[in-house]
Length: 204
Image (cartoon, rainbow, N blue to C red; front, side, top):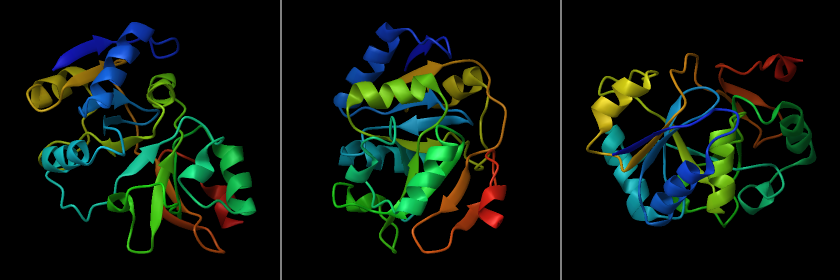
């Protein structure tokens, strides 16, 4: 595994570019978000996606969300109602995963049975810059050990996954909860997980 330490606010582009090259070549990376470290690959690379399922020892029925750089191109990947757009505009970038109806552009492997997808726009310059430079969304699923516990320390992550992942971008130890998950695919919002993001506006 290649390992690089990045500044969280102004990440060094030479390391971002190395990660983007790995993603373009079908590789798997680890990178920080505004909540926890995540495994990432290009959502359009089927082999890389299957590698992440194997690394995480997850059944392929487990759903992964993905990171978009901003709301501008969100309609390529999901159908967004006016209410959903206004809600997301208020809260993003931030520690939320929004569940929306899938657009045809998204590989069906990432759809739920209800034909929805999970979308993230984290408040993290490294994750956002990666997706922007790649030109495609990247998979976002938390880095966990074999017991399913989230790993926050980059050195521990490096030790555990050194031979299984191609590259890691580190920005120091992260502490926190995973993202809040809000389903905006129906007429009424539904809180699927209360995590790092405040979801009180959806209870009003």
